[in-house]
Length: 264
Length: 273
Image (cartoon, rainbow over the protein chains, first blue to last red):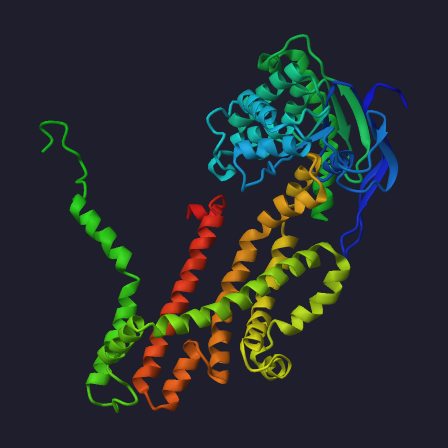
């Protein structure tokens, strides 16, 4: 295995075994490498196991077969080296925005004063200044996800694992959040693994798009999606449109297969 | 009236009328209760019933007022509340602990699940003779029975609440470096709290009911005991004033619990309603 890979997934398979039902083959012999400070999007039809792969890297579920290394160390459980952002935010609703952001800082033993300062820094970074004392149920969806991102960034993980983080947001908020994520990434330069089923989002945000097949999920192809131009204007450039339509055509068959499997 | 352009197109309601209507809806819940007392008074004053079987409302309220002044009510209500709350709190501590353990540890679930299934619908008062045999005829047996009766509703709700905690919340806490112990206190417990409180709200009236029943069966100081004494002395006004006192005490207990829930769950969606 090449050194320098932030995330190294090797021959990982996974089955879900719901009680009294047939086991579901979610991942089949998946191997994937994400370089240090690389932004990779994992793209595939819904139900293809891309979130499962993310959860396995996060250490939330036991690894059945194969191995996952993060910065060279075998994954055996969750840890603050891997920050996770979930689709439905997973904020603690009984804590304020500040309380949520402080939570991880307390756990890793940051002194109180410094923790306050760091929390404020990340709250400011995601433009939630003035909402420190608001509870999650008082915030809009976009604001909730900003708070969740601030909470994750505050403990300064090496790796960001993002599970369709903008999937629950409306189109306009989504576009804004994409801009902000890119600007945060450019400032903090973390390794990002970003799960999505939105082709344009994947091509726009990531340096590399990894496509997965329908269930059981396998790695289908990896496409370089770096462009010379930055900013949302790139989405109108012919090379962007061309890449996006190439990826869409590759993934379309898998999406149809998924729908057909559901219908039968 | 459109000549000055500033006149509102829709007439604003008179602020006095708004305040009056707000006041009405504040007292509105009391109206049916007052109506019941009025009906009682009309029936008893009509002469259709023997006044011994249905005394007049003013006489009953005079008795309530008298016992409020001479301390009798506070003494009885205090004894009843002490037993009810002692039993309830013992039950709450045990049931929440066991309920969380059941939801998290398979062997604990295996052991307690059938016990809860059999015990939840069982009439717990049936155990009174057993507890009297074991703990005597005083408070120990009463409080044991009250705790026993309150236990099941809290345990069942705690199990359901704990099992229903969103796994993403637990995962978030883990990836934010929290220990399992810290997750229990800072994630599982608050996330299950709404349903645990629902268990409390079911168990508390049960605790009150069982307290009154044990007092009636075993006598002594307390609202239930006082009613049985009044009945033995053929004091029908005393019996009816006991009903009013029990109703009032129960209302205060339930109302306090509801207030506590609102305070504890101010962060929850339900607080917006």
